[in-house]
Image (spheres, rainbow, N blue to C red):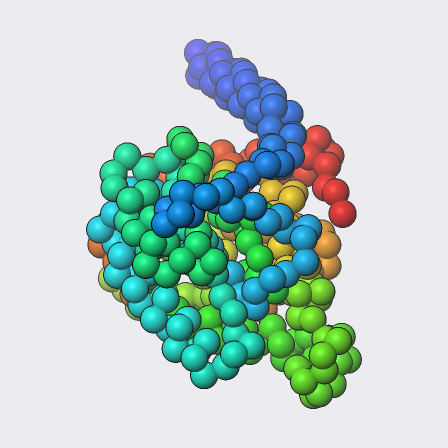
Length: 335
């Protein structure tokens, strides 16, 4: 019996040592990342591949110049990107032809790709001009969250939509998010039905966020995924709930829209660079009191996903950093 107590004591001591080491590592890393939100390029430029002239780079603090900006992060997407861009730009051109007030830009952020993604993106700039399609090169791989942050900070739209390079969500579904944002703006801010026709009304000035959701597909996904994937995903959702709270069922859908006012608050504060930046966005929305709308979107599985089981530990690490960073006030939030 004494031997068993000794073994138990050793195990408890070992667990406490590991937990202390892990907590120390999390606090140290959170402290190291405390200024991750501040390294914004002050003099970033776009290059026009047709004229080779440099185009001044806008900033989220500047007034909007377009109605909508679509931000597409791309890492080694030379094969999936062309089809998604063709579909996206055809849709945007069709809407612009019917409505002269509908102005747009597509901002492609190359997150340090090692393939021909950069060339594919610049081919679209040449075809559609640098006013409508722009490319930001990050040089090395930073992560999806950082790619989207850079794109958002240097976009010109009143509305800003992030979407994946694989085209998993149909671009036409942006109208669902767009319509809900306008509807909530009228309802929440008492703008009335005539707001859209009022020349003084700018949707860009009202902080709102609309999140595309695949939650309605969850039952089918549970039936087709292997049991251990369902177990890991349920566990991840539980950790997300404990970290950011309730309110959004599908935090990881890559189809999200923000007004310019909301994007200004969120993307000047965000620190996580990879997969869990979505959860940080939800946390920050709650902090700032930005209304969030979750809307079902059409979604299909596209081969070539970069998310795998090995991504789960990285996600949990980022969630732990976020929780410690904000709860200890190591991560300051600027308004």
